[in-house]
Image (tube, rainbow, N blue to C red; front, top):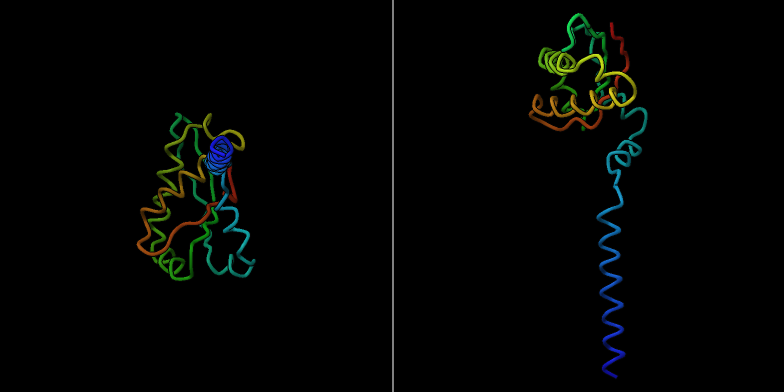
Length: 141
């Protein structure tokens, strides 16, 4: 009887370790689930578009022309963003200007700038959060 209990306990321990490893190593895409839950009307109500912004890049002699769509957590945060357009614009300019032309080439460059801008904009708003940033216009020279 003792040997059977040891086998059952060992099996339970292995299943627990395997389950824990699964939840630890399998990437969770919580942000994608959040975005899917918004309807098109809600996204329009909770997002803002920046102006088209032209700024120098960190690499000498290069500049970028960009525009972003910023999805915010709620309508109250959108109202705050509309009042803080100068701060949003400054965050965009400083973020874009921190990259070189080579860093921004390709899809990975676009993703990098979107992620960096989410972090910068989080510092701007007192209420709510930035859920997503999309590059809607992007040109480099």
